[in-house]
Length: 152
Image (cartoon, rainbow, N blue to C red; front, side):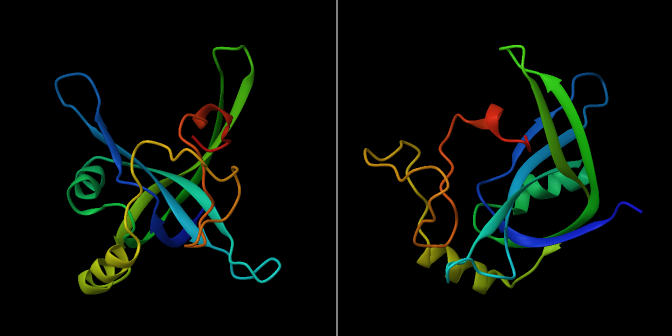
């Protein structure tokens, strides 16, 4: 049986694309930051899980999901691989979402958003090293390293 249930916060707004053709299908991708149960050296750690959802679920994510909200998803884990521009084989792992729902009230979500302002799109001059935890307990992953991540 291949079944996964996750609860976490969106690391950024979902990216939504539509397939080509007469019956365009919405495809949404987002990353969930899922807290680990145990802390390493007293610090909270999180896993960053790539998720993909199709059709009406993707349209729902596009309309209602945004960075920082806590959601619950259930689905299945799917692995794959491809060869990147440099000729290296890249392995991928993602959750294909079958169900998704809010895990907190709008008031709680708004409260969280107010206490965790979004970072600017431009990187700060003194960016913490990749993998270093920020003040909110999430790891900082610089933009542009998508090819190096095992879950794209």
